[in-house]
Length: 161
Image (tube, rainbow, N blue to C red; front, side):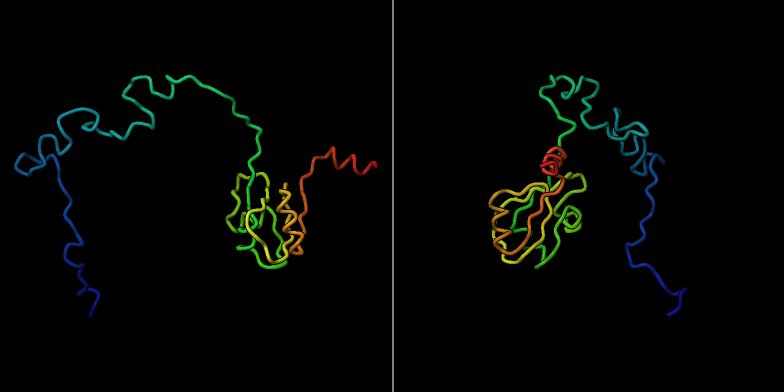
């Protein structure tokens, strides 16, 4: 077999549909676009999300309620059963390693460890918060639960005493 003997499989190459080339082609007059309206125009594109044909859209008609705290922290909440499943004995667990494993999002500001499930092997966990049961289970398994990012006032008060 030579390069000039190669052929495409049957049906691989379709002929381009030429619209607007007379009624007998089957694609004349309106060229398959219908007889008017937005869909018949060039550059028709879909209207933006929420567009209601010029009528004031629902999201602008409804009153705004409540309050959104733009300074609120987003926490990656992780339970012990997930940590036991994703990390081996003696592993270091912190926000970066959780992100690497897909257990924390890029937007998360810190980690909260909760006590669901059991943990049999020791893990060295650095988090911003531990539930009481999570801390007990981690220490019972021989691991360490270190609180990071403690408020500066508490740290200053403990150093003065």
